[in-house]
Length: 88
Length: 88
Image (tube, rainbow over all chains, first blue to last red; front, side, top):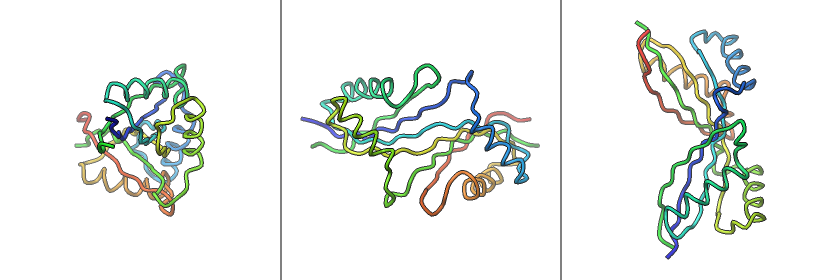
């Protein structure tokens, strides 16, 4: 019986990779008077609903999806959380 | 004494707003053979380090920053989590 899962995927730049968008936000914050912000890194947040036989199958598929489509493994890391929603 | 906080900010499109990027990802997944993905929504994930006197002050500042710079309140929602890192 297939289960429905809600996945929350976080794609972030590797720490060694420069983040110009984050630097721009930080500089914008300084111009707005917020001098107390030290570092800003911007990533992607993907919410996905999928059906799978079990949690292991869902995780395996999400690993593939992240590697092949959502993240660039050369410069980005990803992690995800799975939540079971309901039985189908 | 100022505290250092690590903030994780999630900016997502309001449910009523169309997400063409998410639809494109979903259609890409179907082409790759993943027919079991129902909905994909793409948002932003911002990690920020800031110093503030206390958690309430940090939260107040983050609300302002999100409203003024990180999110467009007309079409986007945001939420954030705060984690105390270390005393300065």
